[in-house]
Length: 232
Image (cartoon, rainbow, N blue to C red; front, side, top):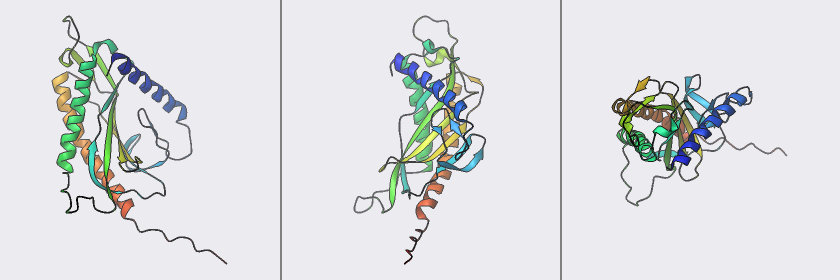
């Protein structure tokens, strides 16, 4: 990602936060708005409290049952209090890569990919889901005084105001069926400690993803509602 694109990501995150504040008084549906995924008025809370938790899309369409998860590249937005010039594009890509690798390890451990059927096709009524994750509102400060571009070990990271936001998309329709909003916390960390924190956060995310999977499958397996009978 180029530096202008990285700065645009931070600006977009700020705009979403401001929009959340403006829309927090809506009474139509669930009154939760996240900084990355936006308002969740079309969702119902499966678990959690405040803005954190697991949410399922609340509509009449029947989701596919979950066959497997594919992990999309992660996104990271930074707070307005960060030193945007401290993080080089290469370091930013390394940071994103570390987060998505941690998620992929934990998801693969929790949800091992099923073997292909004899026909090479998925079981009827099942589908792959795409997991898209963002770490929001990360604060970055340069602490090293060495000359030249800063690497991840030259930086200090603060997660106090951060969250991990995850969306689960049905691959065949791209419909977003579930959302996970996870509190982060953890104070100020250097790179080695942040990498370990990513693993712990990914483990929590995998547990919440299992909860969302069960909720999606319950909706998928629910009996069809009989069509209303026409009156003469």
